[in-house]
Image 1 (cartoon, rainbow, N blue to C red):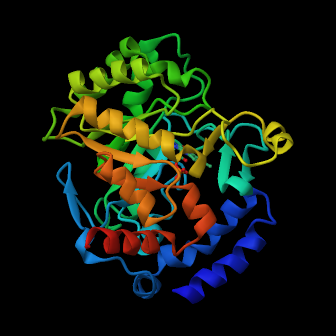
Image 2 (cartoon, rainbow, N blue to C red):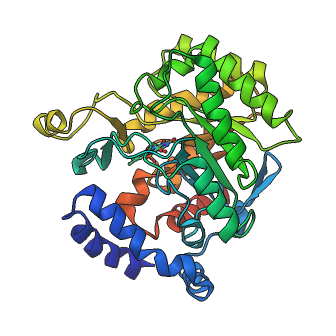
Image 3 (spheres, rainbow, N blue to C red):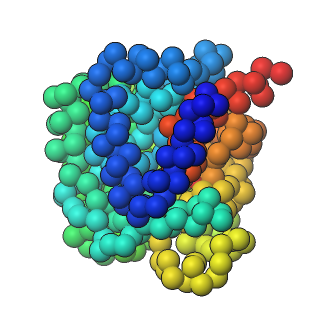
Length: 357
Ligand SMILES: Cc1cc2nc3c(=O)[nH]c(=O)nc-3n(C[C@H](O)[C@H](O)[C@H](O)COP(=O)(O)O)c2cc1C
């Protein structure tokens, strides 16, 4: 394990010499053999073991560990088996949209190494919900990945936010496309990189959208579980109002949180932060705020609703902090980029050691 960690620290200095987009694409190519070879995956699982004691059941699904991959890393669901072999207990693929779309003009992804953070303004580049789901169904089918695979769905850029009916139809098209292959579906209304998307967190719009999806998906317990991903930038009152809609509509859960627009408390040099510009910030600077949102969500929603905590997890202790605030499951993205392929297994083993004492 230590050898793998050292190897990654060398590899990371090479990867970090590339632009974040190039490094991501290279990492994806490097995982291709793992995705296609059961033999390799079996070997890799042995190198990156996870403790059996962390198995957990939620929303009618069994998670080998509560540590998942957050939305946005595998946007087109191209590396699900490889990522599961590295030790993730579940995956959230996407965000997909009903219409296939390109990324926002580059550059749109930046590292802030002094904060071990990332700023991105990608804006949901993906092959389209239908194409992604059909390929997954054709090549794998539900269950083959070996861990629960959820789909994040978002709004197509071309659909105007001003017409909530059009917006609901757009999300419904994605929902219908993915529901057959998705173990759960996350409704993304909290990305800062699609113009005005976060207005959908207002209670009136959220109610209309979520009711439409809930009607399509059936009642709690008999359907594909439906969760809502929320922003860390909501005021306490706005978060409470949104959580009340989650309860009213009887969603299965909440994912807290998405990236933040805040740049408070960063260690990175101000001129670098200014140069990077707009976008959602992720990584450790988000951690405390995401914990607060999880705490507030649990207090407001009560037991029975699944909460997935996400924001700045790099260690078992950080994962544990989310569980202590009321999360059932956790996810990471940025910690995986900085920590490398051994990260999910390491965090699971650290968490296993903490919870067994
Ligand atoms: C490059 C990048 C792309 C992202 N894309 C998405 C996305 O498509 N959908 C989504 O729900 N979240 C997306 N996120 C947000 C993550 O899922 C997560 O909520 C956030 O990064 C906080 O977790 P972290 O600190 O572990 O990265 C993205 C994050 C990054 C860094």
